[in-house]
Length: 217
Image (cartoon, rainbow, N blue to C red; front, side, top):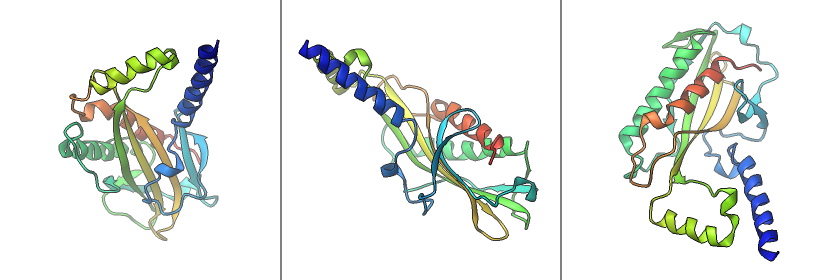
């Protein structure tokens, strides 16, 4: 009975943690945006949970073009054997291309901002590869020990997550009109020896770009 109560208690905790993990938590903010105080929880056009702020004065109809800057890494990344610098560079380049591709459906994409342009600047703030989260059935103490052992051995699947912070500016005034903080989930890696590649995160990047196109204030 005691084990059952412990399992139910831990199971509830895991479920709550799973809900919270869908959005970037305040302690995970990078500082790229400068001001996070007005962010509010909402959903993107695709229904994904995000943290977002939009200026009450923002009207998309006031703009005819957009400059999509290449995403930067903030803070500067520390490549590892599993997440290499080449992969990070490919991820940043692909995200810019995907954003340009999708934004062409809403505005003219330009290489130099005009007086009626928006400027989209973004930062990839983390690329996380970690052991796959515990399943509810692994709450039983014996299973927890087995899960820990397989994780240490590197046999456990590795989840991939990527975090981004986006700021959209009015090119004429340089004032922000929108800020978005969100995270995306890529494909699972087989184990700790599997290198991360652009293809593992493409699904998340494509969703981000499509949501940017379908953005509604």
